Length: 118
Image (tube, rainbow, N blue to C red; front, side, top):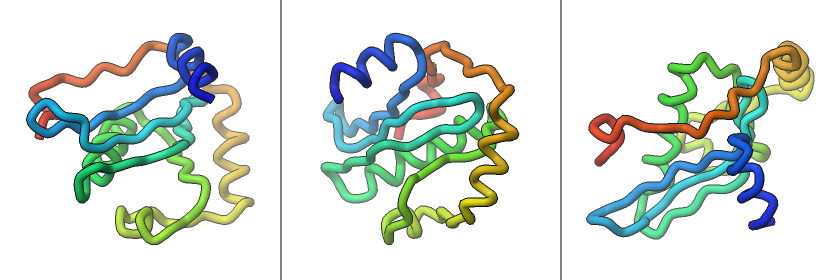
């Protein structure tokens, strides 16, 4: 899995957001971009609420780029606390089908440091 995600990252398809506190990694998330859909794979935190910070900046980044969906796979209490709302399979497939003709932008994500440091 590590090798696969590293390869996808090299191709500009997988992306991650890391949260640091005083130079130490304290949380983050990663997933795969397909067109204007981001499929979240995993989140982690070593400090309370660090993954929430990562998710906040993910959704802000994607909103500015007119993404249509963040696929969180399975609803859980943590995602619900972030404001995630479940959709039906029918709605999910409608969004996926509408996204099929949108080319995936394979550039590596860049964040403007002054806007994304906490």
